Length: 310
Ligand code: RRO
Image (cartoon, rainbow, N blue to C red):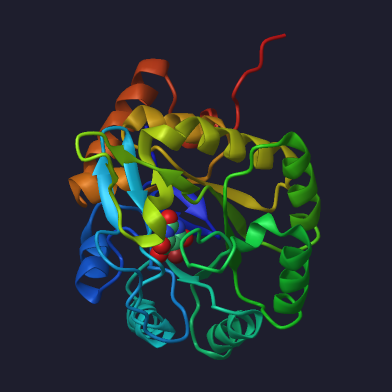
């Protein structure tokens, strides 16, 4: 039995990764990920320049998951690009997450990556919910199409998109129709569910400071929504566009469910933040135990094979 998987022709020990934003802000954190049991890793989403992000407290673990309004703190694109460039001969597969604070900055950042020697995968984050005054790009279908048209006029390296969750069948249809026009390597479903509100009832107060307490939800809260998005896009996208499943992954069963819905790789956010990089070994062992019990010998035996009720 094996949990090995192939992505862009590269063999990974297993399908697990961190979710961008968790345990990947600094070189020390990325080194820990690279040395962990994870099959691959992704950097914190970079903007062109360093950003301090929103005021603290801005990330809180709560009983059913997490709420964050980090506000895109990061060391700047050059920091993450240099890290990936320095490692790209040793590390099998790296993902560099990127966005920009404006249309022009997004294009500039992707041009910087294109012009560099970077050989890995680029994850274009269309779904940050936490920068005051900046709506999640991928909720604007017209803007998304315009941006992708411009980016693919010059970008030739493997490119994936980090999408926000959608909640309407018509939106799955409309977004998939747009995405199918572009040579995307993958889409990653989902980013946090934006702008939830968690309340400390004893204090009768919100738990994070930015934006009056509104923040992106992760963890158990979001697994059914994440699975729905993985399934919906797996059903609608060209088979050449892979799906990365993210949202509510805490156990091997959660990994199994994402793959059953069609995920090729599975990312861990909230639970990685809570448990540290040792979680990847545990998830692999739990996934293997499920596969063993069901008589599966490889991920392809069940990937995308969720049954409906006839
Ligand atoms: O930094 C953040 O506030 C953040 C980002 Br860029 C994102 O994509 N998703 C999220 O939950 N937080």
